Length: 249
Length: 249
DNA sequence: CGGTAAGTTGAAGATTTTCAAGTTCGGTGG
DNA sequence: CCACCGAACTTGAAAATCTTCAACTTACCG
Image (tube, rainbow over all chains, first blue to last red; front, top):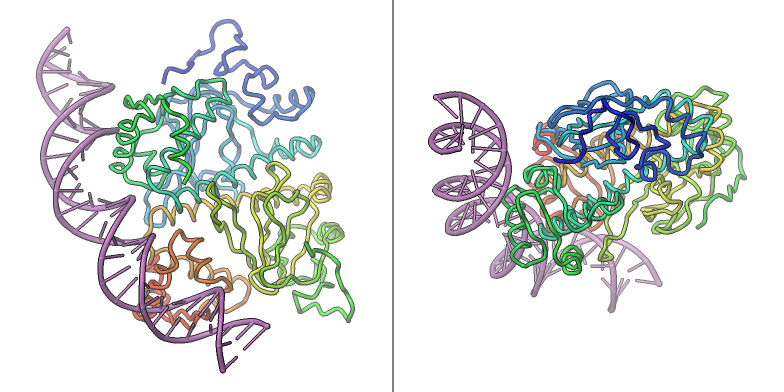
């Protein structure tokens, strides 16, 4: 996806969030990401342990299930999916992660990741070594609290998804999903009505507990009803009010 | 809510886990609960902030959605369900909690509980004031880590449930659920093959994303197949191997 | 002992899945 | 630059599972 890709090289450009030179203090995502509610000195300490690597290409793994848990990761640009394998070995997508969101917290349970994480497009991440973070958390209570919050939010998100899948129809699930992406884009100063889905229909179907055919049919239906305009992965929300009603359930 | 108020009267009976006088160090659940991997001195510090209250009766609330978040709770005896309300106001049960399990972590996100928690039977709990726990966590790294682990486990559990609901048939869901209860009982030195479900069919159906009728039919079917013996809420697992196969998917 | 809540069972209906056939897109090589 | 190939997606029709509606039985509580 045509997001950024600035491959460093040139002068520091603090406006571009995929630039590996941008510190947490300067990062335009720091109102969404881990640093929320930290003071500037605290942010600098956090910043000192963050590793900023080169971008991952589409379908590259950030970590795999059963990898040793060492770090959590903040999405700097691009997007990721995480998935677990079900008892029978099928992929179950557990989340999509956008810039400013944290992934990898599934690994704290027993020192190994239970999920795998894959880049859906060219993406950049900030790696936060967990042991280091734990150490500095002991001296920055706000950071400890923030991390608890993030995990709690993850739980809340999973529970909401659970409710969505277990109580709502296919149309409602897709509509809710689109509204979720819309809202998350809005938080990032991106258009809430026009965006590009970085995941395939298959991945979306999997996430929402549907088949690809049903998912495809729902997109066609919402398109025909005039609630959204679908052009492959490019989505435009035409009638937000009625899309909300479709999601309501 | 009728929390704390430890009645403490008679002589300490360390064998009974619903006795409010049992300290963490003596509690027979301390290999499951928060104290895992803490040293004895650390357990004593943790113990000093734990409030042990009188039992809650069936259908009493431990906390309600939108209550201010103050504490997390360890189940001492009995059992609880937690639930959220969906967009349309329907109850979505998010978990069942057995002795030694921790609930209430949904509240860290924004200082208010997103779930409500209700006793399914007469139950006792240990209340752990969260601010106090955060404070002592700063001096007991193992406790901080343990709490991260518990939250991570909660996430893993939710994701597994998600996968179960979104990929498995009604029979598989019920079979998996029974196996889960069986395993958790086993951890508590209770019979893994004979136990009493503390939740109603309606609650179980809700939790597994089914209707009560389907749930009832599945119980009848598993009973007829000779995998389990159902007598109201009393369940006996007759053929563990085939029950596992039924859950496999 | 009666009344209400909980659970069971049957039959019809509905949504989603499965199976199948196309279509479109995107990349690759000629 | 175009043609070709596979992957992704779309659409239709049949099949399956689950839900809904309904009637009935059983259990629980005062």
